[in-house]
Every structure is written in structure tokens, then in C-alpha cells.
Figure (cartoon, rainbow, N blue to C red):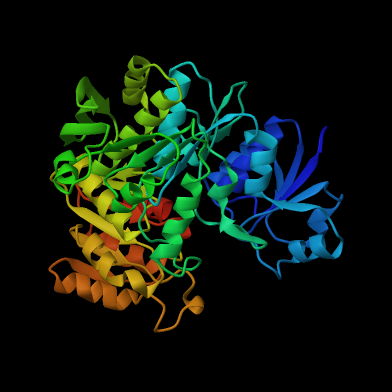
Length: 477
């Protein structure tokens, strides 16, 4: 399809869908859409782009008739706009397919996959390539602060894309990342997630095995050797492997080779992290990153290796990292009131929660850390991970566990039990409470808070606007 096209996006406010809407608009297509429960930062971005969207699903949103309907992966049969699309025989496709056909074909695609760290790594990679003069287009799952957006369309051979392992659409249950055909593929780590669509860890690992099999033999796999699953999968790569990791001695002791890119002498503090960079055993000097947490050292290594594999000059790569502004909703300080700092983070998998709490300890040393956790994602609401959440949240000084986001989807055998989780954390010596609703959380928590406290909000959604509400309460008390 050529010329100016009218695309209508059902589920436009999802991170990938909203970014795709921006790319289509940048290519001068007409873009409309619809969604429910729209909240910042994507609602803000859509408004700033001037993209008209309805805040409810209705067949009337399909008038005038679009040339192509893009069906978001959260949209299922029964959605009134999807049913009208099918009944009227309209052309429809998925976001991942359209992204490949409209933007990725003919480009050097750098696709960032993995259970954890995709958004930060992809955003850092885009910034490094920009700083190195390669002027990439990109689409990531968050607002990259250096660019003020989650997407960009540039006149360049390079396109950085966050490669999600979640399913593509109701009519295409394969992962979105299978559509992207990378030349440079980064796999940060692989740890079982998305139990709602993957029946077991083997099925989950297979998704990444097939992704790796898409890399051409003259491409590059950048593989996180801190993950045993990635080390195993990388052995079958037909493309050269640029491995990265920390803790190289442990890997070598297990009979594995040292990672080609590795970090040593890691020092963390309130202003970020420094480490010594090595490649194939050769010291390449010190790297200073504004990011905190051991996991972000691995994200830096992945972005460095990916950028160099794509042809970026190493010295320009090194110079870019200290100027990286991070990503919204990743250890984002939302404000301070009365000496109390409110921090927002998207973490929702137990491993990510552990890493973020560790990062907060480095960012705010010596301060009391209160973790407020909303079990919102499918992973977070499932019983399989209850023990892991107990260990992860136990790294805070005080814990509040909110109610399940969609409790009606689960029963006693499948759903996480927030009350039992809070009791388990308390039994391990950390004061924890199950407080189901946002207003109740604020009523209980605000009187407890003291100057110097850090409140870490952990949710992959809006969480009822708790961040702003908490700051307002603290300013008014």
C-alpha cells in the first residue's frame, strides 16, 4: 500500500501501539485510534502529537472507514471495534507486522530482546548510536529522556527496536520479536515470564531460540552471559556472538569462556556507577554511567557491544554513556515533599523487583526504603511467583502490597494471595501490610512517613495515580 494511508489503531495507548502511531504520523499517514484507561506518559505523548483517539471502543470510531485497522495485542474477540472490522471485511493487521513492512524492511535492525532490561538497553543503544553519528530511527517501550519520546523516524540505515516476547495479536499468537528480522540482536537475559501465554519455561526459551535463529550469518548476536539460558541458546547461533557479563570468574569456573565484553571493579553511589571495561581481556578504560544497580551495568555492556557491532566508534560510545538521561518510569523520582522522595518504577517480575530495590539502595544510601507494590501484570498476579516476591520485596524496610489488579481472573489455585504475601514478608522480619486500595494505602502510609524516607512505587500501570496523590497528601499534611 503506497501513498497516504488512513490507519486506525485499536488499543492505541499501549506503549508499542502509541509509538507506532507516532511513526506513522511522521511518515505523513492519517492516524486515528481508540483505547480505554489511557494514562501518562502515553496519553501525554499522543496529545502532543495531535493524534485523535477515542477513549472508549465503539464501531462508530471506524467512520470514516480506515484503509487498514491495526489490532493491538491486548485486543480480543468481543471488542466492538474488532467485531465491526471483521463484520465489514476491513483490512487488518498487527502492530509488529506493520512495523516490519512499513519501517524495518531494508534497514540494519538492532533488536533488543530479553526478560529484563529491554527498554533501558534499547534507549541507551539509540542514544549511543545518535551520539556516534549514526542517526538511528527507534521504537522503544518507554519515553527515552534524551529524545523526549519513545520513537523517532530518521533518514538512516539503522533502526533500534525493543523486541517483545509477548504475543503479537489475537490472530497471531507468536511473539512480536519474531517479526523484526534483526541484523544485530541483543538478548539481555532469559528467565521464565508471561505464564499466561507460555505454558512452561521450555516454551518460553523456544521463543528466544527462534528469535536468535532469525539473525543472518553475517549479523551479530549480543548475548548476556550472566543468564545461563542465554549462554546455552547462544551456542546454536549461526551468527558471531559478542557475549557480555560481569562475574567472569564464575562463568569460567563452570567451564564456560569469559564474556568478550565484561565489567570489573564496579562502584555504585548516589550519582551512578563506574566500572572498568574489558573486551577479549584487553582493558578499555573506565565507564561512568548515571544508572544505578548491577543490572544496569549489564544493560550498559549490552548497548556498548551492540553499538560497536553496528559500526559505532568506541570512543564516541564511551563519551555518550555519561550523558544518558534514562527512561521515564525506570527509577524515576516523581517528586519530593517534606523531605520524602517518591520514586516510580515499572518493575513487576520478582527478579526486576529485586534489582530495582538494590538500585534504590545505591541511589539513596542510608535512607529508609518503603516499597509499595501493585500486582498488576499477569506474572505479578499469578501464584507461581509468590515465594519469589516474598524474597524480592523483603529487601525493603517497609512493604505495602496492594490488591490484585484483576482479581476476577484468578481463583485460589492460580492467583497470588496478597494477604499471605504480606504475612510471609513480615514473618521474615520486614514490616509488611496488605492494603487493597489506593486511598486506603494513602490513609495508612502517609502518617507513617518521615523526612528522609524513600517511597518506591512498583507497578507496570497507572496504579490509580498513586504517585501524584501521595505527593499532594504529603504537601498538604
